Length: 528
Image 1: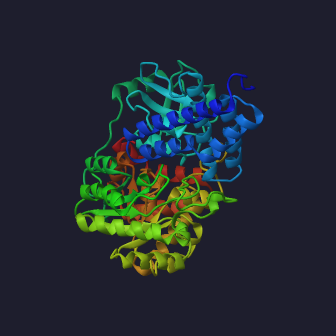
Image 2: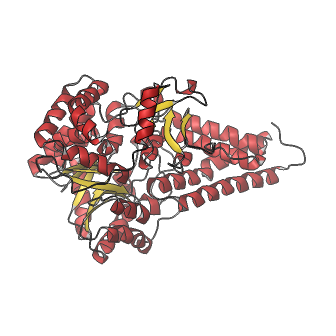
Image 3: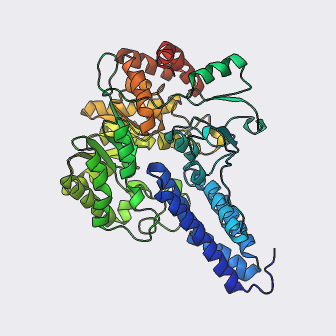
């Protein structure tokens, strides 16, 4: 639509800027009331609303094409989303978020209610083509009993956020949009099954049982024959750390430090970082806290460490690679971590994301040593690091498998794309082979390896990972009880047998089925 004659370009751009700012402020306000991954996602989405690339293109369309602010932001966002979709994961994951921000800005400009989740006034199963992370992050588990989507993948942001809230989620469901209001739907989040119109006996049995609450972690993690497996939590801030303590986590296996960097034009000071880190360390006095250094780049661009444009950001300068251009940012973060560690009683371990080679591991360990941080390790998210782990662990004192990215890179599959959901799972035998290779290489050097991706919180997959040589599992706090219960009922020999069965399977579905069949008595006994 053309801009009305009375609405000059300056006024139109001012309206557009004000609307984008209002959307950003609203999302930041929601982030302030959230914690952990939800707060991080909302903060990133807020930043997209005022993204300079989107703003410049929308302004150009107003001034050069005479478009209304609504049309300008709509077309600019569509163009940006289309460009992101050509770049591959993880940056292509942001295309849906851009369109969500577009809808919110247009709603602000036109004075209508912004897009969001319906509120029918009673508990319901939410069915959608897909959900924006900004909406998923603030779902009410008391009202949304389960989420079913036609799009996305098992490690998509929608699935991860829903599970972190304790909401069963099944994604990439064929025929999901054929479900209609009033249908009775049985959703098995653990098995990934959606059943329409289950028989009356099944419905009655479920109604009698009532909703299953969160299972408490009753003891330190160990197999049935007493082999220790540390059961840890993934956290991003003090509120998430408190929730992890309440859930019985033995420590923190992934402390995401991006939260105090996101949504800023300049790097936070050492003092600001120390203030952000100390409450998390304080919550786990005397226990292990694994701090991941800044994971910027790709879908988390930051102006003070990442380039304005790259041909393929998913394979570009991200994670530890940003330290090649800006070593001072890593140096100041390590100084902040060291100061926070000295002020608290936690056992602090530090790891770098996106390590691919032994040289990178050696340089990172040396940088940590200069700050007195002796427990320095690496994230294993790149297949090259898994395959050459014996050399990586010549330097790194421990490893943590980020199975979400490891799966994306191993299978060349965007985890947000529903058409590729069958590939985007840690059950893929090829991914499990990389887990085994990592653990074998680490064992040669006497180094421990954990898992902090979504695979760690799957109670059926967890014993397989232990059977492959993993010594710790870090997950959303809500998953700790179920994972602990399955491990406590499964011997270490049985874990190794489950691992062999999964590796021998031809594909992910067969691997999952083989393990579930062998675990059937255990799962039945503990109600999974």
